[in-house]
Length: 343
Image (cartoon, rainbow, N blue to C red; front, side, top):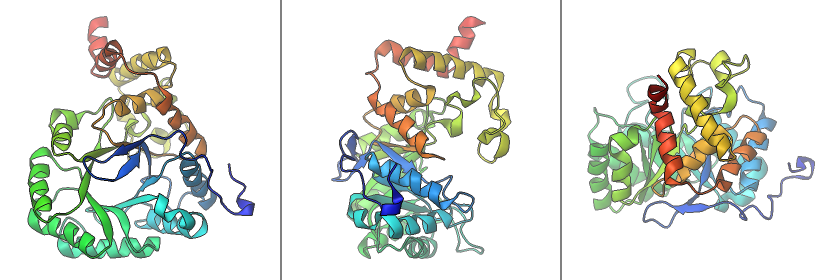
């Protein structure tokens, strides 16, 4: 950990071990692991804790920091805290960082505070830049599809963000395969540097494989960045013996409810943990390694509530190569086939 009493100097060997992967056919590369600021960067987390997490990540080659306008709590607080971290510690390294934000979910009252209108997206981006003290973000995403707004209008707003110099690249989040293809046609016609798609994806939740979104992104030569790779903590050792009193499931059920840990899911986690231990990894490290073995995945967003979690997750980059037998075992355990065999 740096001695912050003397200011912050990034580790000189910060690029020694991280892998950097290209976003589709663009010139942009992302660190294989990126830091998501969905949790733990709002007004309920001490500032020094946020500082230690972010600087530990950067010291180990994590260069991409992912935000959204409504990350908090309260809305906007994660961006404000990122702005403070930039002012206090990271400003000299701005050109080494990829900072992304998004707009699409509710942000302020009234009819212009969410979804995908031009008015909302461009106003939200201006507010995000002001909160972070930036002239531009590296990636600006539309956060979700909006069936009420013409797709041409939403994509036009993304194009304007680039044309105005407020975003270098754009991305799409949670877009299904048909809408993704339509959006690509519109953005390509306007020569917009659209480089990446963001989706929820993990060993237990494989919707982007089933619905064709992952394959379409690869076909269209766009990158893919995934969030919730640990299923909000299920794919860790935390719940192998029940629900700990200090766990997210016990004290913050907004994102991970007790009902998610059914006996069937618990049995799957135990089976997956057995495979991880055979590989010399923790369950969390294996879950990250499993995603990163797929060349279609550009980067995996990790969250952290303390620096030690960053260091543990980084060990996923050191995992052994996957054998076909191990991948098949993962599928059997995750899809419940082990249970069927045992029953």
